[in-house]
Image (tube, rainbow over the protein chains, first blue to last red):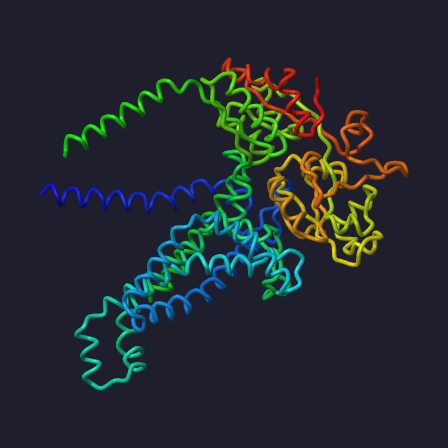
Amino acid sequence: MLLKFSLYACALLVLVSALSVPVFLLHASMPFWQAAGISSIWGREWYPYEHLYGLLPAITGTLWSIFIALLIAIPCGICAAITASELLPRHLAEKARIGMEVLAGIPSIVYGLIGLWVLLPFLQAVFDMLTGHSLLAAGLMLSLMILPTIMLMSMDALQQVTREQREAGQSLGLDWSTQLTRVLMPQAWPGMRSGILLALGRALGETMAVMLVVGSLDRLPQPFYNILQPAQTLTSRIGREIGEAAFGSIHFSALMAAGLMLAMMGLTISLLGKR
Amino acid sequence: MPNERYFSVVFTIFFLAWTQAYAGESLHAAGSTTVMPIVSDAATAYHKAHPDITITVSGGGSGVGIASMIQATAQIGMASRNTTPEEQAKLDGKVDNIVIARDAVAVVVSKAVYLGGVTHLSLAQIADIYRGKTNNWKQLGGPNSKILAIDKEASRGTRHVFAEAVLGNAHARAPGASLIAGSNNEEQAIVARSNQAIGMLSNAWLNDRVRGIAVDVDGRGIRPTIAHIRDGSYPISRGLHVLLPKNASPAARDFVDFLLSAKGQAIVKKIGYLPVR
């Protein structure tokens, strides 16, 4: 009785906190939506002192950076997981796992500084850019940061495919590649998908590392696929400006609106991913 | 065994309670990263003389320092610019604004640009760079490379002072900027690493790879030096402020007095700003 009660109580607590965050964001951003209107979502200019709060450049920047990050991290993470858990001997696989766990535990500011000192000069030299600050840099940083999550969750998912399933496949005389694509992957996919969605959440919310390498400049990529120019993301916008925005001002409320957009993007993508 | 564990827990609790009880007063100063070196050095010196008072210092920019006064989230605010009329309206009568040093906002360029021949520019030439009308150093007598113009976050004091002197308005748009930096540290690092950058930095942050250029006034290049801040000839200078609430604790008040004392002003001078006393 007591056990069930405490279980329900904990679940209720989780539910309340899950609901209160979006409600808070909605409430805190209300003054902004009333003053500037929904059209600021596709506004292109962000000059708080002129009361221009266009969110489009930051939204575009966020979408581009997570797209680049996932484009790199999903194939790399899943392939590395298959290699580690199916092909490598057990002791090597464990070492790979420990390495990934260490990577996952590194604070994001450290990644940011690595990006600043190593990645930016590299991009600058390779693409002949002014500084290397760009959407590409942000996407590459994020891919490095989410790779451990995707790889670890995929390894777990593969290792949870039961021995019966594997033996059934072998007894049918399937060769290894068929075994992989027809037995292992379909069985492990739900676990991998959770890993990808978790990683996506981290990529969407990552502030510090992105802020240091993205350039924080409110411009839409010109043309839209130009990922080599400095840009802005929603998180870097909030990170750079939240300190100065007076609590209760329209500017503060606009930053809360940026947070709300971020939360809604996360929700939309994970709903699409669940299909 | 369990006894030992209980003992260590009880000991830890007592230890924490004890350190809390004897920790004395702790003050927090926040804001401008230009003022920060003075206040953090002074905080160290002050803590040596008054071990019961600890002062933590954090950055964020002048806007953050002023906001921290409005929202009462710090005991001491730091700002490298004057308050705007809106901010003043919220602070009026509640906070004292004290100038502890004077400083020049240097127009800085990368070493390669300086050695390439750009050692002085007029305010109009600098404005053209930030407005996007000039985009190669060659047009200004320098090396043939694109200009990397670094702007700062809108809330930063250095940005206010620079934009007001160069572009005519503290919040003026800078369409020629290719990057936005935050703290002095971040800006200094970007300029030092580049071969083609121009930016704005407090006078105390110059070094071999981050060179301050002279600003032409009436055909004469004025370098951002202490002497030129003192005689007022350098066109982009400003006071460095600390903000102290009128209801501040005696310790906070005493610390600000320390900043204005001979010892405090010696720290100002050592860091490279102009003392006010």
